[in-house]
Length: 179
Image 1: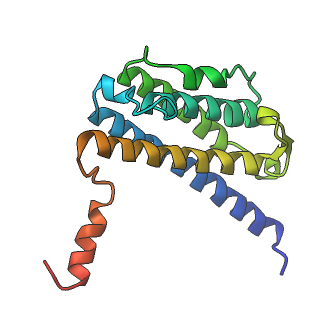
Image 2: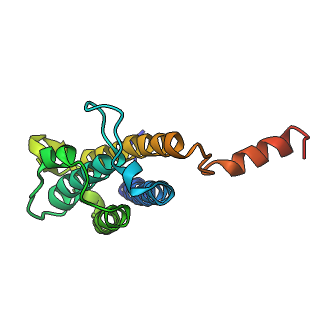
């Protein structure tokens, strides 16, 4: 079965909208996590082969700038990937949150304004050959992966439930007949 032009445009629009929503969702979760830890915990490492939350945030900022803002949006790529992992402090939690927020807001604006016909256009972020659709998908899944790492680190540092899925706990109790 082949989709007609309007159906293809609808699928493309749904992909772009969903991708933008996921970027915003994971930004919100990362901001919540960073708000629960101390500046020392943001930069804490158990060993040299691990990344601190601060490194992950710098890394996400660089990745999103390179793949979406540069690759899809056409801005110049100025990423220094090694510096993202070499950092051992220097940025306060609020600075990291503000930096990531600005980057993701810019990326969301780009994603929301991609014409559906551009999704198959070839781009070359970070030296990879990818379609615009692949670049967007890569960034969303990359952000999700590191967001979950940040959530786990927050739980380790705070011993708190982050509450992101508390509504499911309540729904489960209601469905099982328990109040």
